[in-house]
Every structure is written in structure tokens, then in C-alpha cells.
Length: 213
Image (cartoon, rainbow, N blue to C red; front, side, top):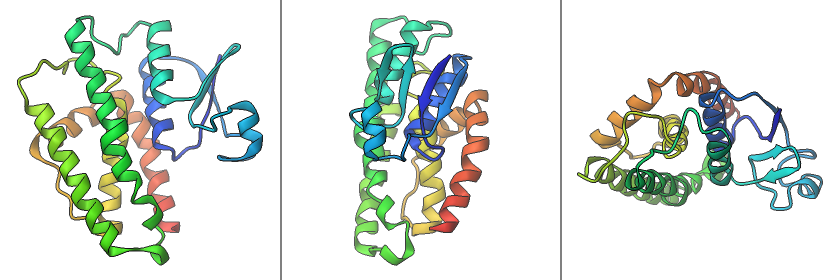
């Protein structure tokens, strides 16, 4: 059985669980020993990253590397298209999420605590996120080849990040509006059964956590 080290509210852990559900894999989920960032956890996972996958003697601690590994080891159902160009475009979408959109969202996390709010930074991050969403909309609306008829490695992170954006918007007063192409993409993702199943558990946990901050 696969083992993953994860915490319930981690965006990237939720991203991995969507893949695991889609692949119909069996896994056990453990919290990082000693807590996230602890020296105890780093004796197991040197980078300290979450999620981490333990498969026999193999340890991988990066959500994208884990996704690629599991897609190769368990090729059915596939999460990368068979055609070369579509695979490249899928990876482009995935990298845009992990290196462009999600990092801008993450910069807001220190200000979820009301006592630490900085309106100037929140406003600048609203603009930064809006710009990234427009870039994503342009990518989705372009005439470049895309794969819309399957759930891909490039989709899993967006479903969770969009949830964070929607739930943080009223908490922080974010001045963000998803472009139409992004709204349609979000709706398509949330209609997928495995994403719906993950978010059915994830959204209440996130809502409850936001109320305590």
C-alpha cells in the first residue's frame, strides 16, 4: 500500500489526493511525525516537503514528481495525453499553476490572521492574482491544442487553488474576478466526480479553519 505524508488543509496534498482517487489507488495518509517543519519529519523526508510518498523503499517529496511517478507506474487511466504536443501543453498548464498562480495566492496566507492584515499588500496581491488569472484565461482561450476530454496532471492543482481563492475573497476582501474562460474551466473541473469527492471533504475543513484564524 502507498503511504503519503500529508496534512488535511495542504493545497498540494489535496492535489495529490485527487490524482490518487482518479487512479483508484489505495493509500494510507499519515501526518508528518513531529509536525510540518519539524526536525523529526526531516529525518524521514530531508527536504521537509509535503506531500511525500513512500512506495516500498522509494521516497519522493514533491507533488509534481509524485504525480509523474504514479502516472507512469499506474498508467490507467492516463493523466497525460498520448500525443506529444498535448503532453507538453498539459505540463505547461501544470507548471503555470505551481510556479505562477499558486505562489501569488500563498503570499496572502500570512494575512489570514485578522491581527496581521496589511491592506496595501492584500490589494497588491489581488492585482497580481488577477493578472495571473487573466494569463490563464488567455492560455485557455488560445487556439493552441489542449486536452479537455480527460482529467490530466495539469488540472489537479487548479481545482484546489480556485477553492482557496473563492473562500478567501470574502475573508480578505479580495478584488478578484475570474475571467469567463477561467469560470468555465473551474466549473468543468468541479463537475468531475473525483474532484467533487475531494472538495466535499476539503471545503468544510477549510471553511472551519478560516473561521478560527
